[in-house]
Amino acid sequence: MMTLARRGRRKRFTIFLVSAVTITLIMVCTYQPLHAAAKENRSLKKACIRATIYAIGQEIDLFEQRLKAVKSRSDDVDGNGGGSDSNSDTADNSAKVSEYKQRIKELKAERRKYWFMKVSKYTLPQSKSVAVAVTQLYHPGSILELVNITRSGPFYHLAGIKDHDYQALKAGSIYTMTIYLVYQRDYALPHIENYYVYVSAFSAIP
Image (cartoon, rainbow, N blue to C red):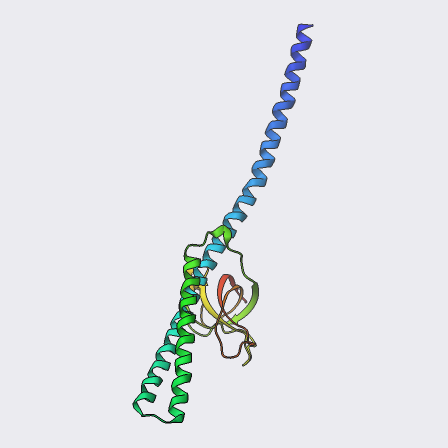
């Protein structure tokens, strides 16, 4: 009787052990790809945040240049004496100075937000797949030379690329790229698509 009981316990233990090992293997096999995907997603978000910070910095530079130009025009108007036209120009320039200063202030606050943003709080922006015919060395700020681009765009300005590897894009080649529209660029024609983008993947088209 003791032998049969021992055999029963041993059998139940064997079944338990096999089940535990099987469950563990399933969990490991499931965890590894999920962990890899989560890590890749986190890396992508961090790269998009860096690209966004760069893009906002470019916009700040743009508005500072506009502000400098308006102030220069104001000095020219003041130097040319009074008159109704002169007074009108002065008022217009004063309004633009206030507008640009306010926009610069807003952009700096927005950039600060992204500097301290937690990756988990960031939502990936819209992504697109595009074909790009490279004819020159690319660098931050370059406009992607989209295949069949028109005068109406869309216009995509490089704000970042995977592994910061701009030199991997060779002139004379056409690439399929996955891009993320990280920040909208200020443009005189708001209906035209004009964005700073991050290139997350690219491959040459034979």
